Picture 1 (cartoon, rainbow, N blue to C red):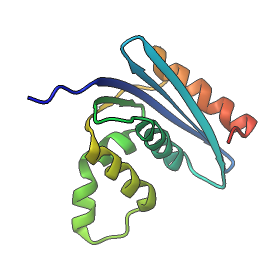
Picture 2: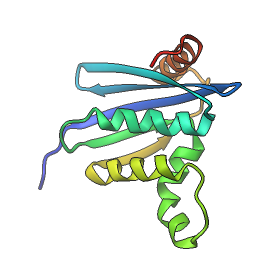
Picture 3: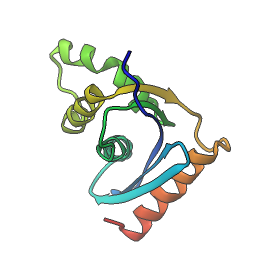
Length: 139
């Protein structure tokens, strides 16, 4: 059986008046990496997807990933993406969904929903970082 490193990732996105921020916290053993960035003319859903994409892009080997997000759009979308494709309908943010699903195909990703603003430490860190990135236009 293949032995893979286990990584925990928390993500969050934020948007206000078209200015967006995203953040991720990657944890592997005692290693922790905080990431954040921003975008103009965007939406909250795009920032939520970007947070997950940017985190997964940082992994340089195949991993088991416990992905935590307070975005039902992201968590449920990961499970429903193939159904959306089969429907033949247009998929909002499909450019980001395609990128996310290609990254997920590399790893063994276990998506988990966490209630936002509920005291979950790393979710709160992501929320703060995403807001900071949005307000300060961190690129």
